[in-house]
Image (cartoon, rainbow, N blue to C red; front, side, top):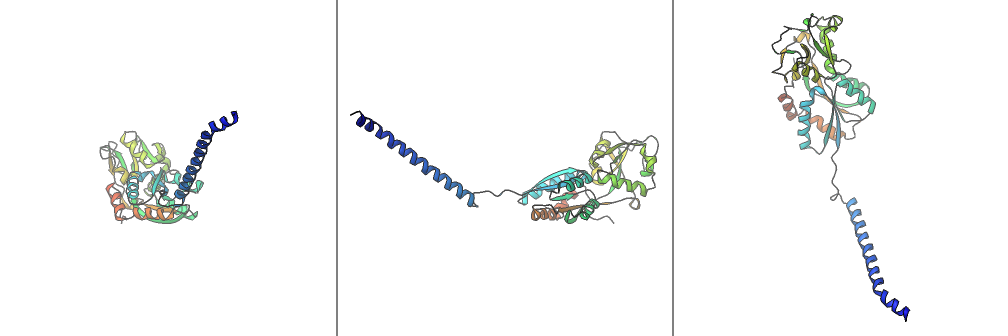
Length: 279
């Protein structure tokens, strides 16, 4: 009697448990099927944008930032930029053996990287014309780099071991017959990037420096440009190079082409960069 009552009372419980178990199995099967379908169906899985690493000279940061924005709107790729001095960037490329693009402030850094087997292709993007940038009104009456060793001047120069403007400045000084030892006592600041030199003129920390023409154009209210004669100057070609280490060479080549396109050159011109080779 007791056994019969027990089975009768628990019969409904067993049925409900069985139904719940069956439901769980069915739901799990549907979920598994859905996961498999999601993994195999290209329409269900969004394609991630390739992310490219661009090593870029600090002197072209403003224009390259705008070019990157314009490029990303038209292409299925994202660009991450590492801005620093050209030589610092080259050291990173050699050390890490990674990255997709390299844009230093002077083509000789790409040529050096090419001799090390690091460059897949290179194109000319724009040109840097060095100029002397002095404080507004030129209170120290600086008319050329020949004045740089004069007593009482406070100068800033790029570090030749770090940035392109530093190495180029040394060439310009030598071409103009300036004794570097005589000049050294007036050098109060050595920069890792060309941008820092413009800032030091802006805040009045130095009397004069050598910078790219496009950098000098950013300080019309705080600085004044003193041109360097063509036969005594050293013009730099700014390249855009695809690295052999690129994991996305197709997208890297597309960015390279965009930089030298009419639209890309228009952005350079808007930021006062020279896009035609100086004659």
